[in-house]
Image 1 (cartoon, protein in one colour):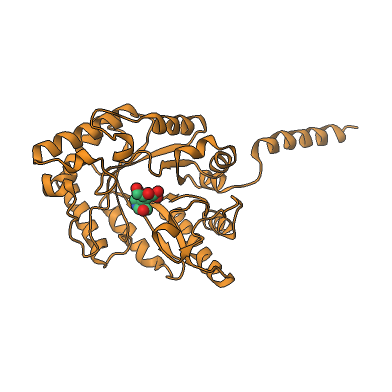
Image 2 (spheres, helix red, strand yellow):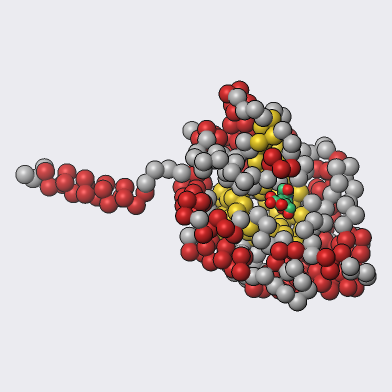
Length: 340
Ligand code: 9MR
């Protein structure tokens, strides 16, 4: 009798603990590793019970895939469409997730009146107003912002966007200073694709730009490598790590911010294995580089994915299939996040 009581107590205790823990997911693994594991979502996802459960169970950060883009959040100069972003911020808070804002200074998805700007003064005034209004509204609730997005061309030169064309060389300074002023605690990020490798024209241009920004006291905290990649191109892990380290030496963190791994269709077992290797490696690098610790997927499901629309002949890029079921890529990410 004496022995049975403590055993029963242990069993009861285990039962209580287990009801709280449940099976491991990408979210629980990321929490354990103290890293951000996020996903870009559409506003509608949070109102869909199946999709929202997947998001809550598996991610600890969300990014609005499109809702915060200029044309969507401010289609007219004096008309703000806050409803989607407000709903997403509330969803993130309710479910104890971080939320990242995306994006202010961009060449794409701008409202028509942005294209009609004529002078440097007008452009600075509108950009500052835009950033200040949004960052102030979500101060303390949105933890990080892609302040500027895709400012480079592949040859490393600056893209001739309306912002660069009108404002000139200090266009990023203007944007980052405005964001810092509106929320001194939020993390401010410069985001781009094909910048993950040192030695590429675009990768080096991004590094030199950030170095210059730091030298002149512009408040930038991190860079984001988007990493929309192809399964058939193996990743050069060492080169990515080296690039992360050179940004770390400038005092900046790196996030893998728009990860998807597209496959040349039709899918077969060996292509799936290639894809899984890429997912696992990215999660492993993000976990093990102390200044990375952040991986965000650009969507979680093949259903409605942007990939087939933008890359003819490619698909199956995400870790849940068109039926919203986990694919083997999910397990690959789990391996990368846990090291097991
Ligand atoms: O996935 C996004 C897609 O739904 C939009 O139609 C498109 C244009 O706004 O933008 C896509 O997201 C892009 C992101 O904002 C910036 N990096 C590239 C992404 C894929 O095009």
